[in-house]
Image (cartoon, rainbow, N blue to C red):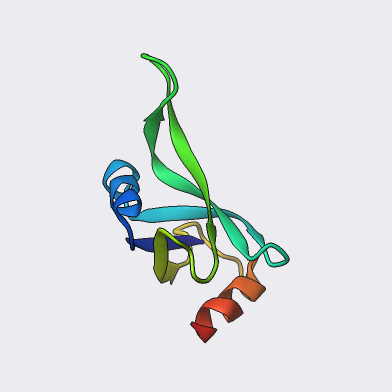
Length: 96
């Protein structure tokens, strides 16, 4: 699943400019009410020759720096019937 983030703060605007507005959801923790996200592109420089994808966590609701404005399923083919890997996240985002 991918999410599109809208920045709320100057820090958020810088991260969107650096890593893009679309992020891949790696992990959802309902108990901690957060998502671990990974950037879609290799935008984090680990050394002069090694680039990596950026990882970060955000609160599912009321994050200080970002707001989730859109959710889309990954482009990967999905077998029918579709069963969401993140059913609780989809319910939480519907309430906002």
